[in-house]
Length: 455
Ligand SMILES: *Cc1c(COP(=O)(O)O)cnc(C)c1O
Image (cartoon, rainbow, N blue to C red):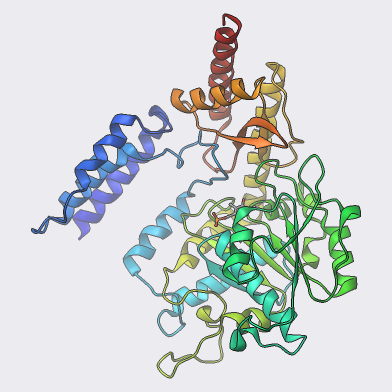
């Protein structure tokens, strides 16, 4: 075992050390070579070390180098050293985090990490939380608590009696709502399209003056961090409105809620502490491994009411039982990685991580602007949207930047215009990475313009 683990650690370390020299997106040849790992399941066993070698040598080269410093696709964090180490231990320990009796360690560390996270994200003390797989599941859990609360008020126990015949709920979202929140609404029987969409401004923020009437049967879903612009909905005005009416406020704060972690950016997240439930990701801004999301709920009884399950054999006592607050039962002890990441950074380290990535985003914006390319968003957080000319030219630049391999940034459309979307979320990104990436993007964009001009 020791030899195998040492071999795995060697291979992992070599992988990370060589990320800087390879293209960020794998070559077509590396991807094609993956077929060697398929075919019918072989009848004969294989030595574990040999299986590991095959994985490393065949699957490794076909990975996307998102663990490195020049991956700016989607909103993708890397893995902090402490979190990576904790992940190795967690795999060795193989704890089931469902119930305290299955793993006192997992239950305790998860509880500690949730408490620290609540502090960092300015979630009120006394809120309940759960560790889930990502913001999609966190949205689902938060909205399930909301659904329960709003219906219980009107004498309807939705967990017991289901939705057929239940009093209606109004769901209000911004026009720029994330698709995962709509998916959660669909899974909860509330409907992906049975929603009221609030018009947004040029940054994708809900416009308070365009809010429809809300009442005590309304779920108002705010977004902290638009996936394109990074903008946060104006929570102070919207939460005040909702509170007055007795509506439930849910926050999809997958990455934007992390503004609260830095004194320099906390003003962006003002007002979010007034919400009733919050969904966020740890695998984005906190840079822990996938799959790690968090839900918080101001009203522990409603999250618990929506998620609770009991059976004679599921022994539990008075302490917090993880499975009573989240949608899953058996699961990995993700709390170990959360704890290690938070403990290794400390409050100042978390703030610094947010500030550093946002600083890199500003440098991207400045470099692109001074090369003559318009930045389409206010770079308030870690997202940059840039156009390289016509939509066709912009899309071509995105495609060629991805193929060139120095870095990877995605394409998007922002309010009718094609854009490259640069998202800086990784602890691993350095100033050198940003300059190298800027140089590559600008070089590719100039080549595309030149070819365009020559017809
Ligand atoms: C990433 C993201 C999600 C989905 O998160 P997963 O962790 O991928 O499930 C939801 N909302 C927003 C705003 C996001 O950025």
